[in-house]
Amino acid sequence: MQRGRRFVEDGSSEQIEGVYIISVAARILEMHPQTLRKYERAGLVRPSRTVGMLRLYSDEDIARLRLIKRLVGDLGLNVAGVQLVLRLFNTMLKARAGIAEVDDARLRLYAAEVLEEMFEALHVRTRR
Image (cartoon, rainbow, N blue to C red; front, side):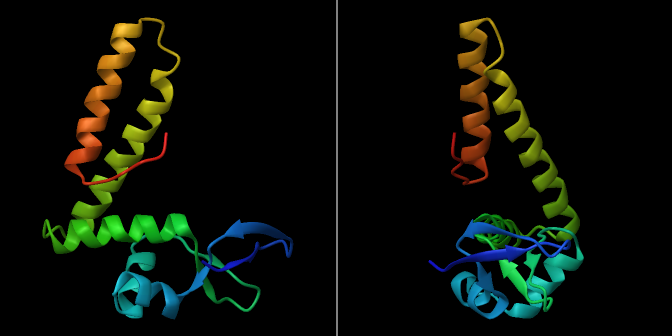
């Protein structure tokens, strides 16, 4: 894993883990760099940029692209379908975060189990 700095638009930088230029990210994912550019244009992924405008893909971007690859390759979804699934996925993550605030322990457990089944249906492992 490469470690580096991400340079943000105001010229400052922040330490981030695992940043990869587009050619390395494409090799890791076994995808063509042009496909990564296409997904960026569609708004499916937003890699950070260096001051020189090189795309930097984080570990989170790589995980997201693996999910996109699975949705397109294994399930045959088009870009619009992937956008819908990713919106639902993000909603599920928010719901899971909100479950912790529910007072009823049985309801909390049930909701957590249902969400885990949904994540499994997408073949996605998420960190809690």
